Image (cartoon, rainbow, N blue to C red; front, top):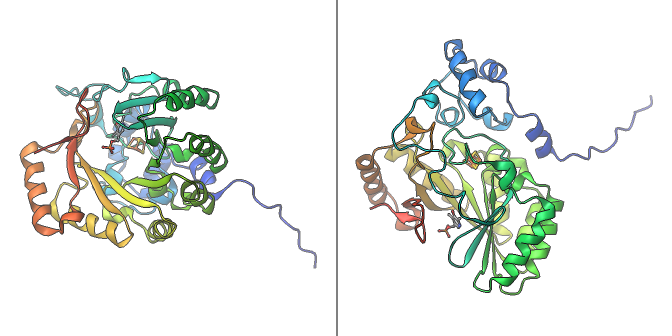
Length: 335
Ligand SMILES: *Cc1c(COP(=O)(O)O)cnc(C)c1O
Ligand code: SF4
């Protein structure tokens, strides 16, 4: 019997997952066996900000439960189109801050590069839901402009690759970018802000470990995990491998009503992060972006939660509760 030899698949698994993410509301409802009564509102909300959910992330959700905390983060709802006082399109004032397209230099010493505009998942509460991704992304031909700016700015010692999600770019492109950054002598740290491995754990490739941890710059990976159930065994394994390779692992969460707004959930998250070698860094209060008002946790409740975390956990597992204030010199501690 003759076996046909299949050509080796050139597209990494994670890129296939990215391409196959749910974007059709009906198909997503079918997969999760959600009540079709929510469907018309979901379709309407997805026309304003598209549905995007990788299958790996959908598989972590409890089928048939519209209140599942993972689902709540990505489920388009009718509530998104209700007007809410104080909720605006660009709550953190990022749009005026770009000095070079895709380069945000708001805080001393660190510079944020919007390496790519797109994400692997569309989080409904995202402050970039109205951000002009395409214009803001540093197109590869514009990287030179950003590199020139960084080379001139001696006080910058840390580069933050952000987005959108920088890990939507291929490892080859990221390795090439990092090689150019390494050649800038005053840079010391390389930080990556990402949610992609949370929704597609196979994104933590050996190539990624290579360009992140294999060079001169001290590597930091800041994840965005909001609930302990997002830490799947595969993600946890991938993170522990990166920790062993010398990457400092941190997490930022957003405090979200109906997702993680209780002390037990947040405590469990901190403990689960630590099991994977990740330290909690920030717990952000929601940016008041139009369409996300239904996620807001009241200040008094946020304070109560912070006190509960301080009482429940060792100090190093209590994230700093912060808010982004337009024009401020850093993220602002809330209390
Ligand atoms: C949040 C942010 C940073 C990083 O701030 P840290 O407090 O160092 O985590 C840097 N630049 C911009 C534009 C930011 O929004
Ligand atoms: S930038 Fe972060 S929070 Fe916003 S949609 Fe992308 S992954 Fe979600």
